Image (cartoon, rainbow, N blue to C red; front, top):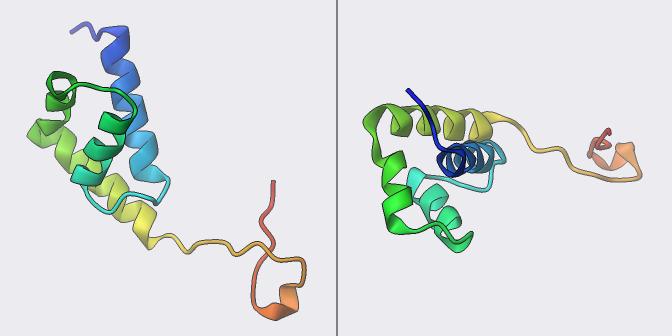
Length: 83
């Protein structure tokens, strides 16, 4: 099965956004992609049940990871973000 370059970029962006912790649902991912200029016909790709399940798994992983708090004083209860 051949994937067009535009479709691959859409999927990469969808999964990257799901992983970054800003999205709470697949609809959030779709909304973000629409804001990036993707059309409804392109977004229909991520309506596939298998892709939805994969995106949901990424969303769940992202929401279960504790966020690092960047601070200059670790004694204040935050951890330094490392490069």
